Image (cartoon, rainbow over all chains, first blue to last red; front, top):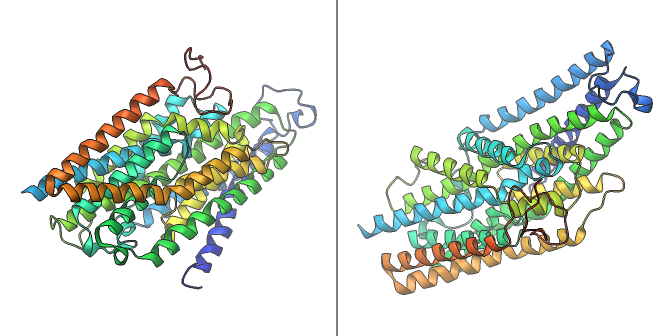
Length: 84
Length: 383
């Protein structure tokens, strides 16, 4: 820590920023992949009109992923409100 | 009595600044959603306006810190505050006219510092605070946002490789709307407070409220309304540059960019850095271009923006200083009134000029041909 840059704050902004800013979208993307799985579209894109694949495991994983993302957003809002 | 008159002018000017702050920054949150078609332009600015309003009420922690950390509040008079705001407004209008997403926060900070320098000289400015809280974060935040967005974009494309096209577009559009909403909310919590802080500072220097007072409710309400109305009007020129000029954006990139922006803005304001939402959003959008294979990033447009960022503080400062000299030179409330009319005339002039090459919700997504205003402005293309 020096008087010009608060290095500990900088570190935390980078690490937490990566987790929330890049990690959550990645989890969301993984959820989408799981959601689409089972439709056979993963291989050749046969059924382009279906959003949900139909595999039960896939949907459970997707639901979990989306829940994590929502929790992240919820914590973000809590983070704003808490500051006041 | 005359002081109360100046106070009214200062409050009106501050709310006008807040308004320009709103429409200048709509693009930070919504440019990518508009460019990818996740939301129709009008719906996007409406949503962003509402969330800015909510955000302005959510958090009130930093309301007075912006000014007190940067200038010596003891020497601030109403005329200084007024001149600073005038600098901020005129610089915001200039950059908006040119379609450059420059920082509204820097315009405000620059204006106040310029007018303080003009009024009391060097000792009125806390230089260390300026470098530590404004300049260094301004240099670092776009780079951090760029890296996070690039990594996010890379991961997102990697993870959804080869999945069903409909799931992908549909899903990412929803994700994009969610992440853009977070940026709007964060913007409301951050930027509306800056104006609240300025008005509170004016009230304090006029001894209308005690020096340790919090922002009165009418200040919070009017600032929240001004910024959300400005957001709703939509700075289509800036939206166009951000959404179409820098990178051709797809929904997954948009989501990654906005997530990165939201995370960096919220975290930094948690640590008390009054950084610019604009710098962060621009960094993120560039990052989303870097992270996608084969995406074209128009570095020349980015370079032009970076130049504008560097100029913003001194330029707004110069306008602030000039306004102070003029208002102070004429003297008293008449001086402030005359400069108030000058700024108003400037605003009207910019508005008239902008109508000639209007960018609206109709043509905001036209193909990027190197300029802010689409070539086909005479016969607007339905989008």
